[in-house]
Length: 313
Ligand SMILES: [Mg+2]
Image 1 (spheres, rainbow, N blue to C red):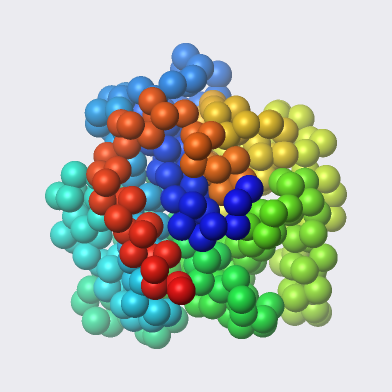
Image 2 (cartoon, rainbow, N blue to C red; image 1 turned 90 degrees about the vertical axis):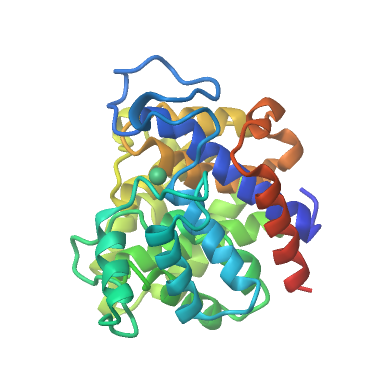
């Protein structure tokens, strides 16, 4: 893995968009009930052409574009609203689709101007994968910050829509693995070295019970679980476990995202969350070119990656 920032940004972003697009046609289908996805198909669940990415990529691109002008939570909120209401950073520039319930509720409050500063929902049942799926660009922004500064930023960005501690910790785990990969660690090293950093930061009396939800990720070796023990629903823990498991049990970008999508259920988000880290690790040149070629707005995404890379220097 090269440490060239622009290359890493493109690898992560296209990795995520391709994983999302592979999953879009089979979203919501249960494992084993659809023909195995091995290539970029279109239509199906959302009736969109091949290469169409969904909310996961849109919100990730909005996050990245906002960070081009520095770290500004209020600006990020407005970009997310532009996406949902005006089709900004959508696959066709017109229509946002596949919007999560929590995200939709919160963005409508923000649009009306009645949302509090930390606008996200904070009850235990608002722990879908809606912030995990869009957090990745933040890794590039926080990479030189202290752990305390880094996790504060991750929590604030998650908290725009998903403000419960579970979603915040899930995002912190994901960002920590991304940072380790960016620093040249193997996937196994990146996973293992994440554990102690996260436990050191989050383990205290207040979080003791909450961290039990992360036992399989933080205290055990999740790669040892069988496929039947891996769910792939829209619950943030389920999505994070599935993505890490796919990364640890495969050896190429292609195998990781194909495995992720074929788990079924929230296929596009599990594909996107897996694909972001797989792209970052294996690199843009190892993402199948026939998949990249059909990605909607490929040129626009490339340009945004360049703009983001320049903004970081
Ligand atoms: Mg989606």
